[in-house]
Image (cartoon, rainbow, N blue to C red; front, side, top):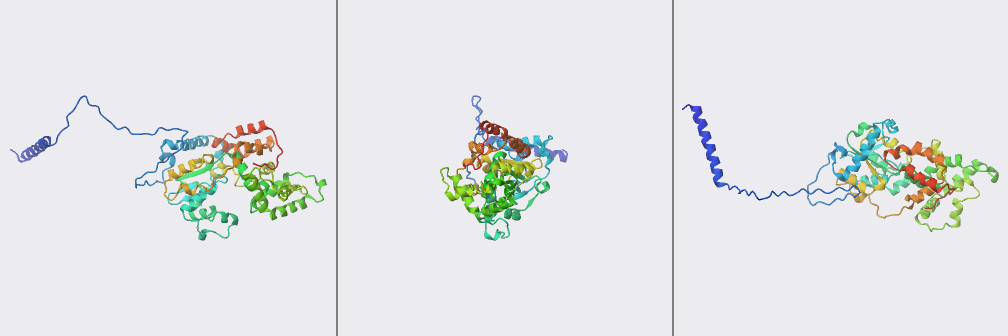
Length: 422
């Protein structure tokens, strides 16, 4: 027998012996043709589009690291996040058309909220941004005194929030070009544009109540009153220039009083003004102090004449949503949607409780009834112009029924109420 054939025969004999041994010593379960195959089904929760995201705490010690290079719309497939993908897709569809949003090719400001994960935030005004600053300042441990810049032009803001947006921007870095962001996770917060404008008016311009005086002197307050409050000079012994200088002095000397009047009347519907407070906001001897600060009607005239401020800048002009794949959060859906984003990011230092205010406060002006009272003071033509020049694109992009709201305003009829208490 040839040598190679002998070797092959030996290998075959060894293999057969091994199989025989396995069959003898390893039991084989008996097959029962009447038995059923039992498979434990995978439990998949039923998705309800109206339900809130509920996160059940886990007891495992294993953590999953979020990969920042993967965009949320490609990474998250859970039904709980479908609405965010839908919002992004809706905006992408509009961006593929000749929509005005395409004219904005670069965001005005993007802050790197978490350098470790490269989470970028477009810091819009009047959309609850203070809470996000508080969250990311706490995560980066920037609330210590050494991080405060004494040269900042907003000292009152420093007292309220030691780590403000300027400190956060300087520490974490920011950019205005899309190339800085690339494919990282980016987010922005939006709200009803008409409600946002009213919120800005109430906090910055109404009754000149903003504590620093900046919005009266530098951001349209004084200009709006001087240009659009028509007075009869025959009724006063002073010319308009002297009347305005007098008004400016009174407002400067009563900033805290004006602020407290606004706070008290908003918090308490039954609050009764003292005679001094009443005279301060209804000064019969000076039309520029009756009331102090611009009315909503006068501020709208100032905006339509070209006046601008970041607190009323349209969302799309500030964040350029066609250039970045934003996670779109809605302020009217907070805090649930804020918690959703934190869950997407998955960073242990970003704790939801950092964003929750310690005191729940009622905000009655957010009711539709209060908003209608304010907007009834606007001429129909001015609201339509504001809608076309300032609100329409945002209302369409983020699907807010702005025109439906104004139909209700028109139905209620006009009003000459200069100081709305609600």
